[in-house]
Figure 1 (cartoon, rainbow, N blue to C red):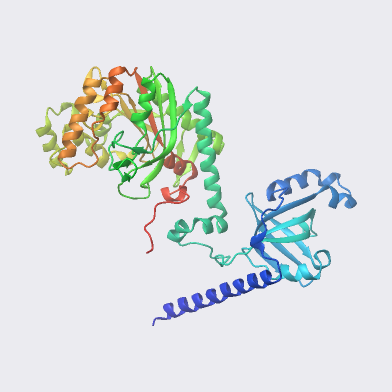
Figure 2 (cartoon, helix red, strand yellow):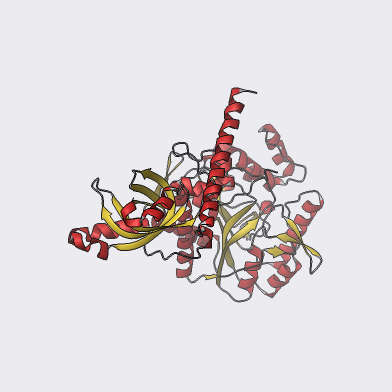
Length: 508
């Protein structure tokens, strides 16, 4: 056995022994009729940071004899540090706002309660009733009149200085990650603020938030491989939605002029630092608008959210300064490819010529790929990584845009854009295709691709085509990847850093 294995086994034995001690302590409390798990509530009147801030605001007005009366409170949290000095102790508890110290004296708790208190462990959750004061060393603390054990921690928190550093274990045991790495909680508080800001922005522009089904009978709305499940009562296979798009556009047909949804979508595809099989998307649809309007609202919304959450629209991401305050650049896919490769796809006459230039540039393509598909492959190979500052990539080929309206003067291309920042797509939008005849033809093309083995191609949605036949007004549609936006605004390297519970393979 290697020395490293011996050390690991010894550490595990020590941990197991410490856990056994905690179970024994719990049993002792239960025998004395002091089972913490029988406590159903504790009246919390203050939290750490707000309590300290309030004390600082009134401290200069208080006489010493007024302290216990005017600063009385009760706080609760997890013990994160403990210093025993015989007949007195200091503990630090952590609550939802931060940490606060408490001074606990034997002569104030009484002999029995203080003896119980001294057996409390790091990780235990306690309620403290007392009053705020400032110690001789200047730290605002709670002078405890009583300490109640509210929950016994039977596991050992990661050691103070090394913490929980194993990245995979942090994702698997997010609850421990949140306890020992305060900056992780900050990321998710900011995520909540980002989503709230998006909602407020859209609500103020008269968009109506709606909810559409997660279970779909047809996989559609995006090019992606779906998750398949089975509905027992109906005895039919169904799909976890890959996009809410087709349902939301039905609502525009029905007479809602502005709708949006923020929710989970599911795509049974690869995983990476920027891909998770389930993720959060914001999709909106606005009647009587086009993709230029969608560019305007996208730019305005992202700038607004960033300023509201970060206090500035100029941010750092992975060491690069990103300026969201400047007007976002706009460039067509054809012009972007020409800029970075010298290849002008407008001068390419047909598929054979496109395949020839792809072979010349060593761009791999498949047999079913058309000219527009090859243009997109060029973009992904040579251009995408260079779009660092906010850039609207416009005018996608019709072959990769089955739900987007064609450009009237250039029908090989569509009124579509994707927003790229730091080389990643953050938004996708169209002037929505509202011609049911054209839409049926595009669906049929997708069906042919599906029959040829493309499991990301859309199925024909007959009910959606019927909806279009009733009449969809000119409509702009937008989808924003919420997780990627949170990554950007929190300077997070991986999508797993902004998902509380990212998808992980079972350890079993």
